[in-house]
Amino acid sequence: MNSEQSIFPPGKAALFKGPGKPFEIIASEIPPINDGEILVKTLYTTLCGSDIHTYCGRRQEPPNVVLGHEIVGDILWLPEGRTVTDFRGQPVSLGDRITWSIFAVPTHVEPPRKDMPQKSDQLFKYGHTSASGNDVFNGGLADYCILRPNTAFIKLSTDIPLNVAATISCAHATVAGALRVAGDIAGKKVLVFGAGLLGLSCTAMCKEAGASWIGLVDTDESRLDWGNKFGTDETYLATTTPSWPEVDVVFDMTGSPDAMKSGLNSLALGGSAIWIGAVYPAKPVDVDAQQVVRKLLTIKGLHNYNYDDFVNATAFIETNYKKYAFSELVEKEYALVEVEEAFKFAHEHKPIRVGIKLN
Image (cartoon, rainbow, N blue to C red):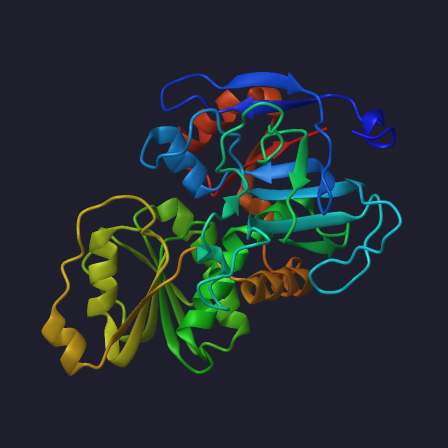
């Protein structure tokens, strides 16, 4: 670490030790910042659904991981003597607010396809990597985050609430990818399964994309109450007999095999099912192949997102963060040292999001 970097004090990080085990709060010095890296002061991290799945043991992560990948922060250190620009080509300076992609593609690795960088070999993912040695600041539940080379980061206005800005880099970017995969939404009837942040973001994006009708389905009636704030025309309790109309596009944000099957059964001739939520092991989906063939249906999946999705999600939030009640969806905030209580609350009460505010 050079003298300029050494002015920053040690930072805290919360280590996830495994399901059923308490988090460990540690203090660590900032390691030397390598060429092409950027040091960020983390300001806010939201607990994504996948973080909760990890906490509960439904998803497996390496030991001693610093969870959290929905992050926003301010730039603390940049390479001296060079102009640094964000992914949209805007110059950045110390103190600028940024959010960044969940992944970084190693410099020597070529993505399998230009539109699928998130599936590159040897991919680095924030909030999904073991904290070992001095490599501690690689997830959202820490005072700092060191951005690897080839991380797509975007400068943000400080007018955007922190609890909204943090969610761009996972939930909204993933939904932007879902709409990309679905194709033109204008004039189409859309049904969204899951009234979490993904589902509510999806209804809002579909509204802005010109959908003619948007339905929202969930097993939790209290979550459905959010629907009218996010562009939904009708809401439906999943535990009742389906009463929604045939639709052109179904988005599944739940990962529930029953929901995905119900969505397929809801499609009109030539319809498309976009599956986003199936990111942990579950029973197979019972698909009627004859129905898929005779109705000319399409099933598409998306995991994470690409760079265009990240840019489009950022633009969507910049334009619409005041129009839709995104800031209300973080129902409770905690400090980093309260991370145990934060996860317990998120698991037991199932809010849309819980926020971790870092000083």
